[in-house]
Length: 531
Ligand code: NAP
Image 1 (cartoon, helix red, strand yellow):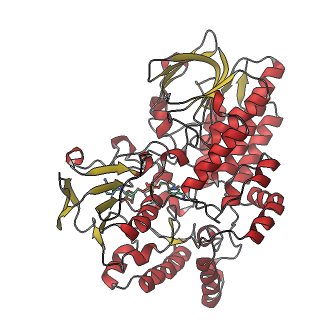
Image 2 (cartoon, rainbow, N blue to C red; image 1 turned 90 degrees about the vertical axis):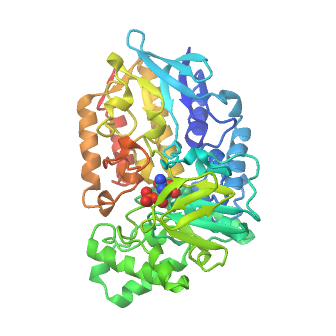
Image 3 (cartoon, protein in one colour; image 1 turned 30 degrees about the vertical axis):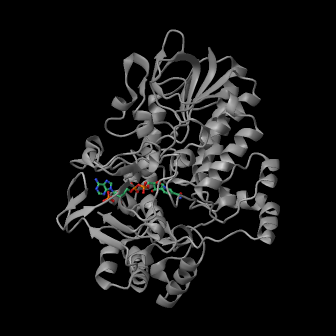
């Protein structure tokens, strides 16, 4: 019998195993992939990289690790990040605590004994007192629900399930469906080598320059000397990035002042243009329209053909109300002779054929088709597991009308289950490792408290769950993102049961979230029944 089973060997699962092992518990991790890395293990598509400053993304728990590891670019590419995950696993000898190639199929709570029974897809089984899920918020890839998808005779890959062996791009006719943060990264990379690239765009997104560059030796020294300041700043900002909103309001300053800030942010690295912008742009439609027009102007400047530029400018949502894809030469791709943009709002996909994609504009012949069609976000990876709590209730049934959680970490009726980065957890809307460390530290402290007091069972009360769920909705009130279709709102056009908006993220900010979690702990885990 395990004291704790941890599901997933990504950034959360690795750190959770590290912390629980420190406590001397009998812990085991289970991971569907063949190795560590989570997101960075699965998303090997060309162009995948951080949108967070590399040095703000790595683990902060080990000074030695911080001093040893050299990030080579301000925004690290996926191969380097996967190497980092492997380095961490080796350095802290984490791999031996994980059972790889082992996907959890079901977890059933036994109320008499207060234990979870685990069933794995390979037929294996196990038991644990506490079940900690570290399954990731964007880890359940969704294939496009397009007729004929299985008939395509060429090579086809979803970005979130990219193969380990190299996929040839050079000299091939490539199609990409999807223009979210992933699609944008893959498109700008594939365009460099493909004989021809066709981008099938249903909804354009507001993209902004990443302004990435290599880290110089002097910067490396400075970064290593500044980690304390870097993490202090992350703790202070709303989403734990090195960017925080400008307190001024766009509508209260002059047009010249607006332009000055926007030009500066557009030319700076990372999410500043989204997160360090005027404080009203994400809540006030009029203010939002001003920044949207600024970014639209940039798109018009960068794309030579005005008709193509117009297609790339979003018309159904304002800047920043969906996750802003960060780009490096994305718009210039559409000036290349080997790239075509098919606007699916004008000519929708009719079906996928053995030869390629048939739209209202005709059939496009392809050798390689890439689906950058996103994920069943935040709850999808949990829903795919048969998680059965008290009285035979299935977690996904309990959440039929949307997630109900306490702190995004626990669910009433599901004792001894702790969900790292679960729905309504601030880690869903965060520079994620910063919030992961907070989640893991909190869960570790809670487990430690249980052991000190001889408790065998921890369960969120229905009242605490209701209060938190209401708070999550209150905290998002007034944000324009709640009126827009995106994964933040749990919408996915390819899944029938994801057709109604159901807020998945906690938008109240990580400092407020952290404070609340700390208070709960200080009050002896208020809102939890401990027995
Ligand atoms: P996404 O934002 O959900 O985008 C999916 C794209 O596929 C959308 O453009 C969507 O169009 C399109 N699509 C889906 N089904 C389609 C269909 N049947 N026909 C045509 N188009 C279809 O997914 P994502 O780009 O993978 O990004 C998800 C999240 O992952 C991001 O928001 C971000 O948080 C994270 N991410 C992070 C990084 C990073 O940190 N570097 C990189 C990549 C992704 P509609 O908009 O019309 O639905």
